[in-house]
Length: 347
Ligand SMILES: [Zn+2]
Image (cartoon, rainbow, N blue to C red):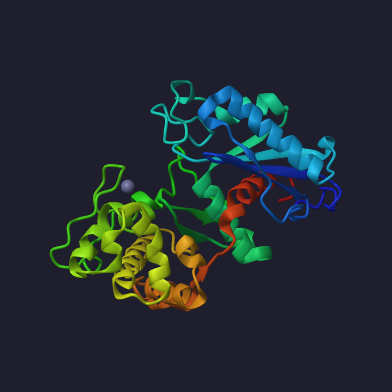
């Protein structure tokens, strides 16, 4: 702590967090003391399909809206945190190949961070959405101890997102591609059944974490196999997209097919965390996403299965914790704001 810095008070200054998604932006305001001024989603259309100019305009609108909503004068804003879906460089240049959300050619290689900074006339700090969510999960879990702790977060959604946090800061890597946990290949022994086809990921790898522990992995790889093992299961008659989404409700009712699928996902995450234990040896292994927002019993079973398949040394097991982090719908905007706050003196 720099004691020459003026003491931070709630009224001294703020940062704004902007989470850019495929259909909507979500905005938040974080004051100098680390308090969020909104406790719900504050959304506007993201217009990413209309190209960079429209989308940067929509982000500027999200910025203005959240300041109005919280009665925050613009002069109090010191920095803006921005997150978008990847892949993008560490400083916010969208991949030269584009991506699902940024498919128009005008997006390829577009510097969204720089464009927003120019538009707002304020420093903009960029993270990809998975890293922003991991940063928020870390700070939410550790609170005042966040800057002295490390964590690895796996967030199960359409893909497998997450990130690596060291001393309260997200590890970005040289090209901005650190913490791509979904694409870490894992040993499949103890995860797959004998004769089960090796899962394929959209990234081109086989047997990485996302090919198993994601909604896409269920649809593409796991469900088809498990339906052959449970002939006559009611999900056999549903289209695969719908069946994959219904699966969690079956899991909550302890349906054997659903437990087999989610058990494989939990074991895959355990294998990932075993790699993390030997890489960064974090204080906490955090889990988020749809699968852990299920009913408490199912959530506990999933977390326990992950823990049982994470092989820690005795010394590690004595100090490490496993936890579920909920309320991650605001995580992108909040994590982006935390990243912006961390760049300012005194943090
Ligand atoms: Zn992959």
